[in-house]
Image 1: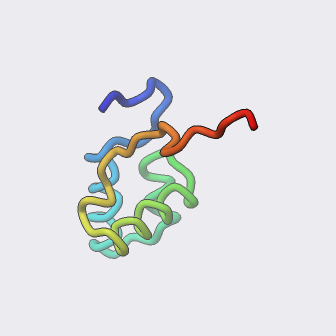
Image 2: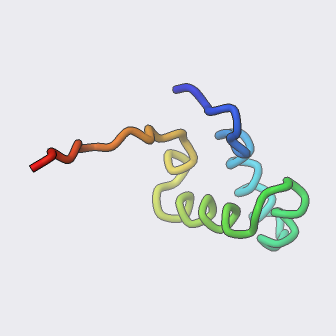
Length: 70
């Protein structure tokens, strides 16, 4: 999967977010240290909590279903 040029996080950085949280850092500390928002940190921590390591993988941004013009 291609990462777009403005992407702030990669799967490796997302794993680092989780590792730093498990190391005792707060989401705010992680955000400042990695140059991302606290919202981004919390989003990846929540995905990891609900989906495990697979939740940190890239996902397609393509719509699952196209709307018709009806």
